Image 1 (cartoon, one colour):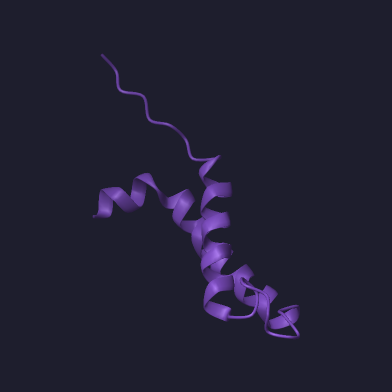
Image 2: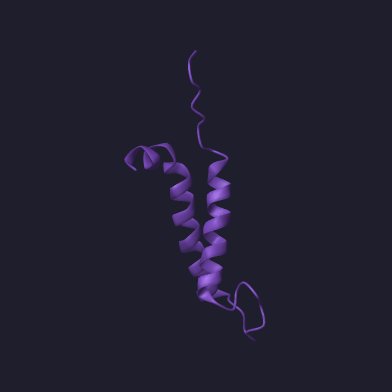
Length: 68
């Protein structure tokens, strides 16, 4: 478990930052009439933000090459 966290620490950080950003987006902007699929519910916005943050930060994840 600890080795998984060490290998994916950049992606995990992106997920956490995305969750926080999603919550802030819901709190500040949100959806006024409640008909928006993503921004009407804070859980949906936080999950979407976590997904986008994880994908974005995964680009910067260093690859580990195995030596023959």
